[in-house]
Image 1 (cartoon, helix red, strand yellow):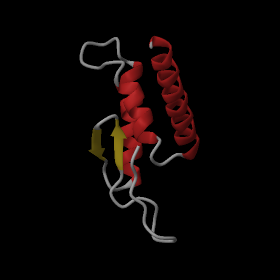
Image 2 (cartoon, rainbow, N blue to C red):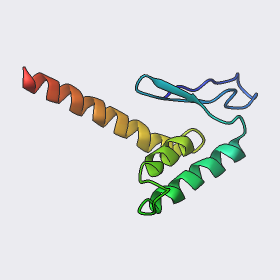
Image 3 (cartoon, rainbow, N blue to C red):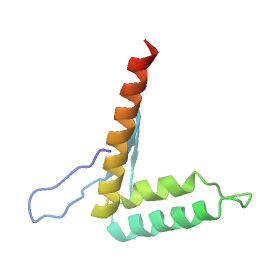
Image 4 (spheres, one colour):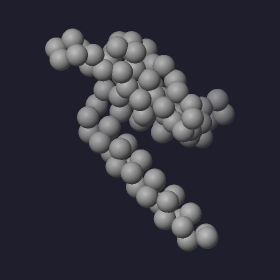
Length: 95
């Protein structure tokens, strides 16, 4: 995940971005809009059995919320470390 930070006391995010693999997506500039977007994606993900919505929305909503909320960001970082460790461990076994 990539984030652009301002200096001390000037706010946390200037142009927040989310990086996933090789893709980078810009997020809305205000925290309120990011929070509403993240919550809406999570709710849509919980209703993923409906035709228009999908279960893919839940992890995307959590990813958007992780930009502004420390506990969610901490969980995402732990998952990223575990996933990287798992991928590295698996690649060494295949050789």
